[in-house]
Amino acid sequence: MDGNGRWAKTKGKFRIFGHKSGVNAVKEVSEAAAELGVQCVTLYAFSTENWSRPQKEVDALMELLVKTIRGELPTLQKNNIRLRAIGNLESLPTACRESLQDALNQTKNNTRLELILALSYSSKWDMVNAIKKIAEKVTLGELKASEINESTINNALSTYEWPHPELLIRTSGEHRVSNFLLWEIAYCEFYFTDTLWPDYTKEDLYEAILSFQKRERRFGKISEQILEKTEE
Image (cartoon, rainbow, N blue to C red; front, side, top):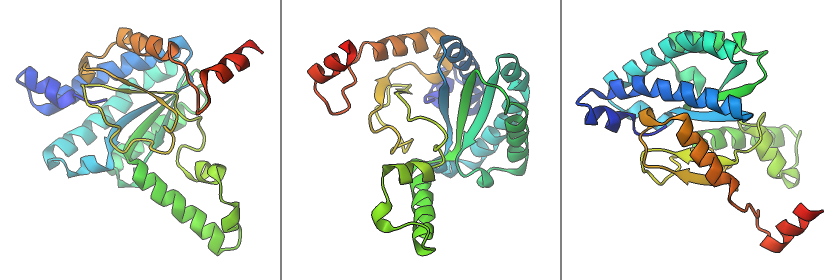
């Protein structure tokens, strides 16, 4: 969800104004995804690298996070959306953790869509933790090094409960993944748009999904193999 700060600057406003405006895009995209039958949406809300931003902006973002979670809880319940979270959640301020945990608990029985917030998250952080978990099992004799495979790594990551993403959308004209789900997006389709996040609408989401639907996903195979499987 990139472009909040730049969007605010075009309006002659402080960066936090852009982040506040970006909340509306989160709401619209989440509801649209639920209507389309999308099962999981992961929003990269705050990376581990974002902690290095000016302290005033970080504090404002954390305050905004608390207000947003509390304010949107009724909407999540109304739309049967379950809120989830990944990342180093212990690094969040106490008020953020408490508000987040309350929302996680209150929406845990919702089944229409899983809305996953990546907070204080980075893929490298997640991979390091996964390697530590696996190494500990080897040390304790619970796992042999020769038994380590893709499933072992999948199950050690914080995303182990969900399928790997099929489509990654990057807004604001940037063409990078910024340390996001590096393991999980191995065969993900990328969609880049110049639209700044606060301007992102459900119509933009529809356009991204239509582009995705037109693509041939081969997973290392050739077109003829994919065609044969489709005709079976």
